[in-house]
Each structure stands twice: as structure tokens, then as C-alpha cells.
Length: 361
Image 1: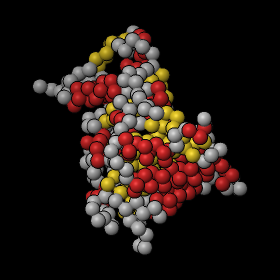
Image 2: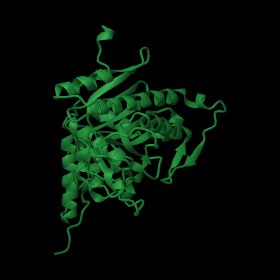
Image 3: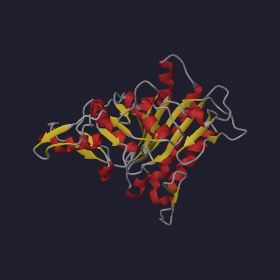
């Protein structure tokens, strides 16, 4: 019966009871997040109806990136929904240069939250899936005005992480440290309903996602891995691979959660001033927690994402995540490259060649 389905709110409460207690403050914060996601889903679904002129208004945000009108709207929705709840004492958003404090006169809580209010917004013009990503941390005791250092904790300290999808259906994917669960918005009753319990990533895959337009900038381990996959049945892997690229992290990770795969936004030489492209606090860390909770792995190619000590609230890192055996394979290639070892593969398509040169003795 429809009325017996598990809603998002009911799931959070039951999960806490099952694990030995309840946390009304965390429940309230997660409910505020889901409410914000409903508002954002509604705004996204309207497309250009949000602006009767049909004009696409873009500006540049604090990080020097193109910012669309819906980026601003989504950020404002997240900030306003969360600051009134009395569950947090500070927020970090992709769209704000500094920490956002809870206004004076509002109750403050024991949590911190970092979020990307509208991931993949470059896809809005072509009506592809976008989403919201969030990470929840515990604040220091008696925190009134959190500092950057309060947020700069390794991803292992996350209490909960999740993301919303705004596509053909609106969804929330969440982990509170005990598995990954997916909820689909039932617009008739206005509730997110549990539809994907205990999501698991297959350990092996024949699918990978990477922006091949950056190929000339990749490090050699990534070039080696991709060329092995492209070689398909005629290569050392002995199987054909499919390649995907949506340019929306939420869509890429959801696909991996449902059918396996590997996502790569690796370190490259395109911009030497950036170690990577994706933000650690509110993109890489929450996605890494979700992927690991679903049996996958997440790394920079050299370090586990969740072990990294953040250096700044908008720090960027390389991100490779997905099916664990593929992540491990690519990690071995990075390790071999860093040791100066030579990696060779032979295929009828590419002949025999080396992508790495051994260091001089």
C-alpha cells in the first residue's frame, strides 16, 4: 500500500533507533536539507519558465566560474532553509567565498554543513541532470562562530553525506555511515520515498567516464589506463569498455551506484595552479563517503580521498572513484609511475609501446 512506504524522514528516525538512539537535531537538519531539495527540484523543473523572458543570465562566482541564475537561487534556498533550523552553527557553500555564519538571534546547533547547491549547472541549458551535494560534520562544543579550521577535517569525520538528483525523477541519495540508500520524490504526496535500499557498486566494471578533451593534459598513468580500455577485446583487458561523460558529478556517481563504473577527473597539466578540479569539502568528500559505503573506492590516484586533511574550504583535488578493482588498478599505475617503473602493453591496435620511461640509474 502507498501509505506503508518508507519516507525519508521515517527512514532517518528508524535508522537511528536501530543503531541505539535518536538524534533529533541531525534528523531536523536532514529534513531541512530534503525540504531545500524539493524547492530546488521545483525551480529546476521549470527551466526557462523561471524567467519569462527566456534569457539565460550568467555571472561569475567567487571562484571565477560561470554562475547561472539557478545557481544563485539554489544557494539561497539552501542557506535560508538551514539557517532557521537551529541545527548548525556554520555553513560552507561553493557559491560563498567565506564561511556563512548563522545570523545573530537565530538558535545555533552542533553541526556544520558544506554543500554544492547546484552541481552540473552547465547542463541546465541542454536539460540534463543536475543536483545538490552535501556533507555534514560535527561542530566543536559550544561553537558560536566556526572558523575554517573547524571545517578542515578529513572526510572520515563526516557524520552523513548525500546528494540530490534533479532529472527525469528527483532523488536523494544518502549515507549516515551504514550503507547507501536512495529516495525518489513522489510529487503527488510531496515526500521522498525509499526506492533504492542498500545500494551496492559491483567490484568490476566495463564502463568508465572521463573528459577525453583533456587527454593531452593527463598524467601517464591515466593515459595508460584509458588506452587499455579503448583497446577493448583486442587489448590486454580482453573486454570491450563503454565510455561516458555527462559533466555532472551527481549523474556520474548515481550511474556508478546503479550499475558500476569508474569516474575520473584526474590531476592534469591544464592549469598548473590547481592540484585538481573538484572541491574536497563539498564534492569529493561526500561522494567518497557514499561510494565507499556502497562497496566502492575513491582516491586522488595516490591517496584515499577520505584520509586527506583539507588545506582550505575551497581546496580542489583530483578525484577517481567507482568500482573497487578498477580504482585499485589505476592506483597501481600511479604507484608504478611514481617509482619510475616502465609500463608496457601490447595490442594489435597500438602495437607494443611504453607510456613510461624508467628513471636513470
